[in-house]
Length: 112
Length: 114
Image 1 (cartoon, each protein chain N blue to C red):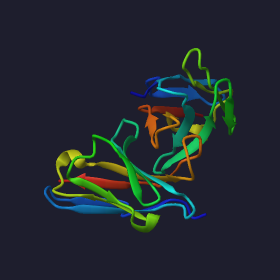
Image 2 (tube, rainbow over the protein chains, first blue to last red):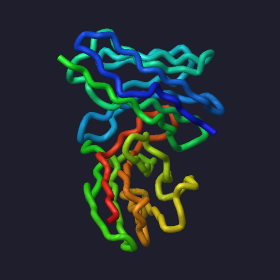
Image 3 (tube, one colour):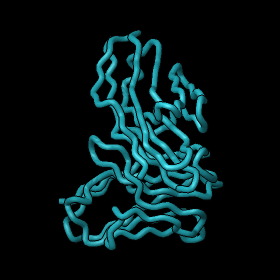
C-alpha cells in the first residue's frame, strides 16, 4: 500500500538557518504530493503541492520538488524564522483513491 | 468561504458512552473526509464521501464507528460504546474533486475517553 516516510524530529534550528525535511514515499500509480503545516493549536493547512514529476511547489519561502526517480519530496527553506515553528507533514494522494496518506510529521522549533 | 467547521471541539466521555461529531464542509465541496490523529502521528484515513455516497472505509473504522452525510452536505461521525483507545483528534476535511485538488481541514474534534 501507499506510505510516506519523513525525517524524524524534532528539528531545532536558529533563526535564518537553512531547513531541509526529508520525505520519501511509496505509492501505486502516480501520486500528487503535499506538504501540510500544523501550527500550535490549529488545524492542518496546505503549505505546497506538486502533482507530477519534476514539478516544484513553493509557498512562503518553502520549496519542494517532486522527484520520481528517488521517490522523494524534500521540503526546503533558505532562511527560517521563529514563526515557522510548527509540525510539518508530508502526504500523498493517488489518482484512484479519495484519501491522502500522511507521514508522522516533523516538529520544527526555530530559536531566535 | 467560512472554512471547514467541526464541533464539538473537545469532548470528554466515559468509556462505553456514545459520541457524535459533526462536520460542515466548505459549501461547494463534493468530497468530505474523516481522519483520526493521535499524538506524534500523522492523520490516518477513516472514510470519505463523494456527495452523499460513502465511497471508501478504512479497516481502522470498526463496527462501532459510523459516518453519514445526508443530502451531501454536513457529515456526522458516531462512535458507539467508546473505548479508551478511541481517544484521539478526529479531523474532517473537504475538497472539490480528485487527488490533485487541495484538501481543506477543519481544526478537529478532540475526544478523551476516561
